[in-house]
Length: 368
Image: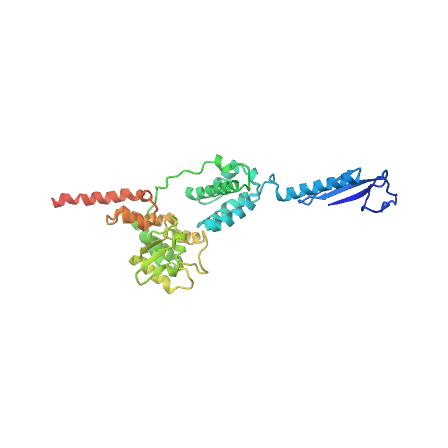
């Protein structure tokens, strides 16, 4: 910021204190000069004003200084970019959310390519629907749309980022997600493998060139654990002497740690993986632990070779369905094996258990 003398004759500026114009050499008097206040704003632009007296110029300079500082530090009217708020949210999520890596993956793959450089107040419900529609294959040439649950996860992430920014007064506008309906689906529907599909899948896994990837699929089928729980297992979590495996609270969906016995088939997989051990993780890739979403391509290739169309999560449904229909596992035990936080979550398999109970009840016809 600066206050300079302004020559009325040639319209040039000179520093305060000089007696004549530096350009036309006119002597400065009350009738031949004015004063120019020049301000550089935080955004790089300049603001100037010409006033008649030095006293007025200094008051105006002080006012400009105050306005410049407030606009730089306390500019509540400046609308943040979604990308900038995302960076702040991610720092918070890394401390407060176990699943922050999933959020980071969904942002990078689904949100950033569309909304990364948009001011938050210019993102409309139509823009949100555009992101979701893109995942569902409405406006691109995607060979296979994402599952409704995956689309809903992205919708929840966008809603959460906006609400997070509003609660912390980083953003004072509206959340456009409130005017968008997430995809609806019945989460109780599952697609367990048929016996013939399972035999074909196991045959492919036995002969798969990347045995590290095959171990992950087999272990999911034999234990019913979630993909994230399997990929986060470390050798310190395996008790070979007592055949126990521990899933840490930071890696489970319920947020509670869990220790379970290892069945014979699952123990074979872990023993095979132990012979190929090269890092702290039980089921790493060739280069180390898998990143979020990193196993998707491996599973896609295996699934295609085996000729099955199920999701990886359906391996968990297969495990639960076969145990439930065996007639040897009650619903409370199944709940613990699956790591469900409530019994209601396990009720989706209750009809299979009831079928087994019905068969057992009919034994009375033979006995009596």
